[in-house]
Amino acid sequence: MPTPPISENLLKLADQALTTGNYQQASIYFESHADLLLSTDKEQAAAYFSTAGKYEKVDFQRALNLYQKAFKSYKQTGKVEESANVLMEIGLLYLALGKTDVARKQFKIGTTIYLEMVRDHIHNLGGPLTQIEHDYLMESLDKVKLCFHQLFLKESR
Image: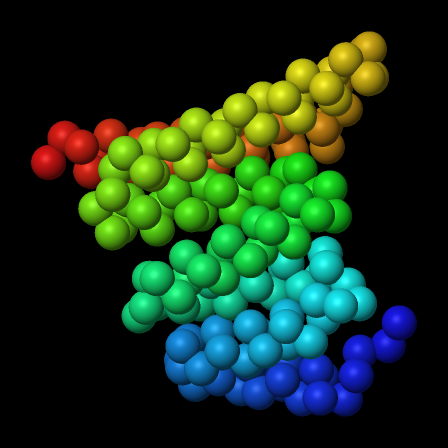
């Protein structure tokens, strides 16, 4: 399905905002684009909600809401890895807000999803991992490691 002209314009405006360093405005454009996509392409909408959350550098609560919209949309479309990634981002936001217990909970849920995904993948394949699968697994585990390292640093202060 082609992107409606208004959505294309929003993406161009977001790109211009990023070029000038106006991340908050870019975030607003990405969110508007995602809202337009929700009824036709939840997976793409989720990706743009996540992108909007990434560029929201001022209002952590707004970023949190954007990531929660992304998580909900990814979950509805069955995108397991993306759901786990968003949960880890939500955990990092809670950590930045000083809510370490909530951050830890998000990290644990995200990690559990990653591990279940890997277990299911290995079970379904029944053989050794390809290089791409190995790299993908390592990238997921690096994300888990980074999040728990950030939690450790925050708690050790």
